[in-house]
Every structure is written in structure tokens, then in C-alpha cells.
Image (cartoon, rainbow, N blue to C red):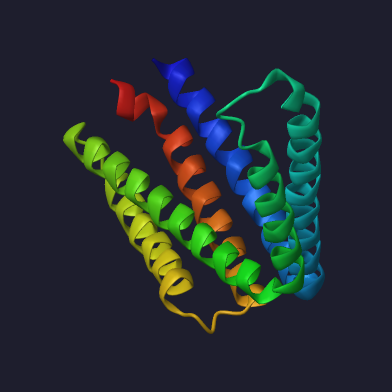
Length: 179
């Protein structure tokens, strides 16, 4: 059981470090990140569209009645172009996805705090406080449509640091939690 807690804690720390790095990049170069994500996403849709259109013409000789590859391909290309042209939409979607992920992890932390309390450990209060702070950060990112990418990056950095602190506290108190 102790090994499971350690592995889970290490995975959580790795996830937090990834968020920390992404947060630093978002604070450092916010516009470039949004442009990069939009361009990559647009290119992926366009390539998928070209592939589907090519598939349609290759399979056309097979008289496939339910082959919608041509329509799918055209729509994918249009979506790819729209994504690349309307970069602001990507920024908003990115903000909402990151906010929802932060809220989700806070709820997981809240659940862990409740379980730790049931074990009779005093560490649960720290986990609860951190879960509440993480939840507020996530809620801010989702609700605040004016949250610019750099602000999201700052919140991701704060979240990652709180996440790492909580993981270290729990990992240091594993003996108390398991016994």
C-alpha cells in the first residue's frame, strides 16, 4: 500500500511539474503559445481533411454507399482554416479546458482530504485548504472570460506549486496515514 501511495504521489508531482512548465511558458510567451496551438490544431484538421478526401476518391470505385469521407474531409479542412484564422476562440477554449482540469484536480484533492481525515490524520486540514485554493483558482480561470493567457499561466504555476507542496506533505506522512 505504501508503494501505491508513493507511485501516486510521484505521478501527481510529475503532472504538477508539467503544469508548472506550461504555466511558465504561458507567462513568458502567451501570444506565441496561443498562435502555436492554433496553428498546430489547424494543420492537424487540414491534414485529416486532405486524407479523408483522398480516401474518398480511392474508395469511390468500391461503390460504398455510406462513405462520407468527402464531406468529412471538406469539413475538416474548413474547421482547420477557421481555427487558424480565429485564434481568439482557441484561447477561450484553452482557458476553459485548463480551468475545468484545475477544478477536477481540486475535487480529487478534496476527496483525498476526506479520506485522510477518516484515517485520523491531522494532515487532512492542509489537503483541504490546498484543495479549496486550487478550486478557487480553477473557478477563476473558467468564470473570468477576461483571464488572459498570462494570468492562466500564473494560476497554473500557483496550482502546480500547491499541488507539489501537498504531495510532499502526504508523502512525508505516509507512515501515519497507512498505520
